[in-house]
Image (cartoon, rainbow, N blue to C red; front, side):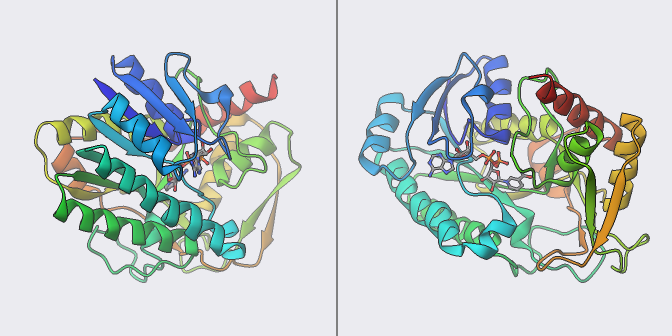
Length: 327
Ligand SMILES: NC(=O)c1ccc[n+]([C@@H]2O[C@H](COP(=O)([O-])OP(=O)(O)OC[C@H]3O[C@@H](n4cnc5c(N)ncnc54)[C@H](O)[C@@H]3O)[C@@H](O)[C@H]2O)c1
């Protein structure tokens, strides 16, 4: 069973690729290595160093491989960078994805999974887990670019023989259980990776952006999902689509939130290292509470989370960070 993955040299794509190979799928990866790395690629995957915007080459490749499902991870992923350089995000995440979708339609791809994000929701003023049909008001060009793509996918699905699952990831964290892949972004932008870098001595301290939110300890609350559970959701998504499941948009999170302070304290506890934290002003575009309502995801895919534990997420992130530091 052939699957084509875009962005498979990145954090999430490489983890999903490993799981699919473990499960016996034939995995083909398209990546331009703009942020991805050869070091994360599973040895058994077939690699094509290509940009998703190369319409003719990609169409030809898709026709040749004839994948049963395409999983589209490739894109630019940093909220803060998108505030500084919005055109980069509209170009890479929209223009190039439109070209990629054209290639998929021309090559008769029928099943498609797309990586969207909780950033499509923007601010949530009520402290309750967010449902898929909640009001959407992205606060960054990154979030807007993903929401536009979601609409585009919906329109394409209604016009062609083309089914889609749109996964809205909340905060993805942790590393592959066998430590084959994990986050390598340098400089890191994710809270847990930054805290683990401090614990490993790669940085001196960590900043907390705002401690005056109306949360129980004043810091922002997020829903952290282990990369291994997220990877399994893609496996279930493939099975769902191939068994005749209809197009859907699904939140991917645990429905449980942890504050920035809780996460930092847990990293200190697990690593056994105390380190400095500094309070800085709030950042633009940081919602105070982003937690998923995951009922639809559980019901649609029959998902049972296996790694739903902040301790486990941080233990695996810390082990991965230690592994990176031994090179
Ligand atoms: N990491 C998270 O917490 C998170 C949360 C929500 C959504 N997402 C989404 O998940 C997907 C994967 O994120 P990630 O954290 O693995 O990011 P990443 O930067 O590690 O991976 C992205 C991959 O896409 C490749 N790529 C980028 N533009 C490309 C192009 N034009 N052509 C070919 N390859 C291209 C990069 O080289 C990289 O390998 C993204 O779409 C992101 O928006 C991630």
